[in-house]
Length: 286
Ligand code: LIP
Figure 1 (tube, rainbow, N blue to C red):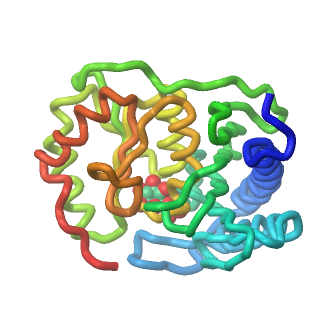
Figure 2 (cartoon, rainbow, N blue to C red):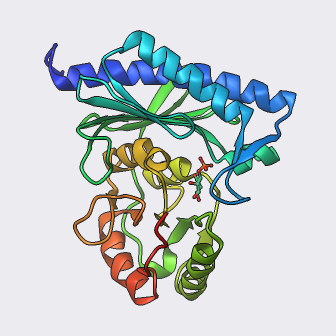
Figure 3 (cartoon, helix red, strand yellow):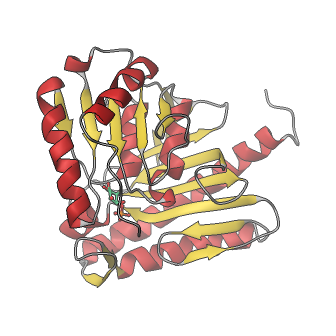
């Protein structure tokens, strides 16, 4: 039992808030998807799209969080950052997996995280995370020190754990690719070298759900470069609480430079291998 009034007990309450808002946001995203979705604009490249639903869902989340927690800061994919004096920041991807959403692939998510410290993934401390895939009704939650759970809109949460150790040749590895054409070409080369060494590779297109898949053993590892903070903030907390290591290169925290999530022994095997296979190339400055 967590002492009332502690940061931990507050975090648990704030996770409940995130869950309520994610469910409402997910309902809106799914309704807009049923009505039909089109590209509203492209961002960094033609592959990097935004829909009106992304913007509308972010506004809903931001509004609900502001009403409940006016002193907290906010960092969202579509609307940017708003400061706040509490030292806590909500990091939100209103629809992670926008390309899946656009194509009607039922694998996208509302991702809401609460972090402490500067809103920089290299230094922040993740407190709570909630990732909801409204297309199939799966809701992942975790708060620091409280374990990771998979449930649905009606609750029924079940604690989840990352898969146990496996040798490399039995590892199912999720990955993803940058929007920049040159960078994704180089990532593809590395993955081509890795493919014969592992059980298989998956590219599902939603980073937050890739991390949740590591958390519940549907994948043994997940690796990607060039993610934005909102893509991984919530999923990283969930994967860690489920027993996975979630890291960047060396001692670094996960960031746009690298995110590697896996059961600890597999992570220790994969990181030097990925470097050997050429994964640590210089990224273009954005
Ligand atoms: C996307 C991810 C996807 C990843 C892309 C991008 P978006 O987020 O979740 O898996 O490979 O680099 O970050 O743009 O759909 O919110």
